[in-house]
Amino acid sequence: MGESTLYYRHEDGSVSSQITTRAATEVAARPGAVAITKSVFDKALAKIEAANAELVAVRRLGEARQRSEDYDALLAAGIPAATASRLSGHTLADA
Image (tube, rainbow, N blue to C red; front, side, top):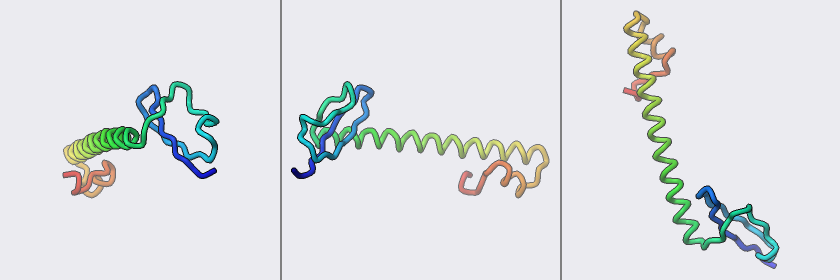
């Protein structure tokens, strides 16, 4: 028997794929998983990946803003710029 790929949507909204060489009736999916088509899987995965990318971008922006604020506070406290940059992690790319 050849390989086949099965696609599932889980109760939490996540999706997964499972490659198997066994008959589909013999494959144990996680409880609550619902079989879906590859097309539905691909669309759901793209949506999840886009949401994750947006979260990462927002987090990185927040981290850069925090590094910049820390850098400015260190400068205001009289710390030399090079030292303030090292301590805060702030770089010109954050500006």
